[in-house]
Length: 380
Ligand code: FES
Ligand SMILES: [Fe+2]
Image 1 (cartoon, rainbow, N blue to C red):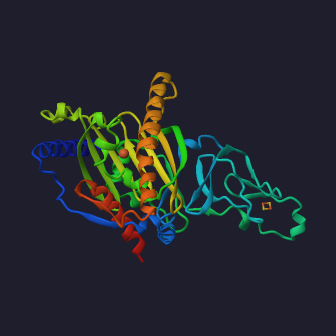
Image 2 (cartoon, protein in one colour):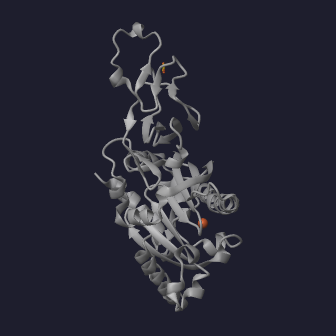
Image 3 (cartoon, protein in one colour):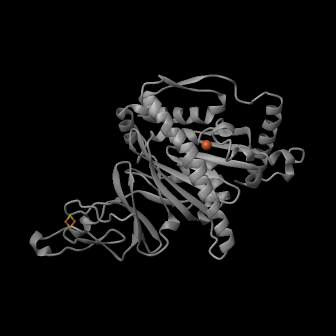
């Protein structure tokens, strides 16, 4: 975030702190009802897959996970299996399917190879996608090799992340919009590396996990024994449709309230972004969480949590400290608190317990996320 934006955000947060003290929160009170079918109906998921996953830029990897020539990772984009490779400086995203009869070229989550050789009949491809070798090629008659390279999907590396879509043009900066794109540039996200990673499937609709990171209303109860001691119940929000930026006040911000110039955004506040549709970034004081979600079924979501930090190759002590912090946030806070409550909600909604979920003014970020999702589903 640029210094002038940081100063403005902190000034607003301090003003919100004062307003809170005067019991006058900035968002007007109201109740929004969301029909629970959005979390339960497989038809809704099919519509989301068609309209969101792969139609909008989705984070499929981090460039630091492909740090050598020949490195690859496998993943999925919507339902399409993909293979992200590095050939020299270029990172590319391919459909992970052999052009002969469609076997997946790589099953490992990650690896490094000069050639990608299909396990079925041995067709091999260079990491830039070109078809190199076909065993017993004569049996096919003349083969149009140039047309039989791996199918490449539009992709772009921006802010260190590898983004991809299934088809069409890709403009990540335009998709992020000026607020997020400027913030990520100023945070120098492109220089960050993945230092830790967990990958798990949670028994909840993917939106329940987005919901968990879209509001701070639950902080003082759900996180009573973990995060709550560091935070105040005060946050500000910017609607950067379809994305949302929120900044929550840490208790230390109170000390700086009389002298705003002493406040430090990373120390005294937590900035978090819902990057539509399914990525969440949470800026802790000296590292950040990047969560990417992939719906597996209407009631199952794969949650990949990456720890990103500036390169600490030579600073073992700092690295160990950050790794401990990652384990605490990942296991205690996210897994045992946020993700467990998402599973709890899925189970009650599936039982028919409630017809609707209710949102108040302190859940504005969640309301905006659902509004963006609804708008995207009905967009032509
Ligand atoms: S399916 Fe890949 S070589 Fe036959
Ligand atoms: Fe939470």
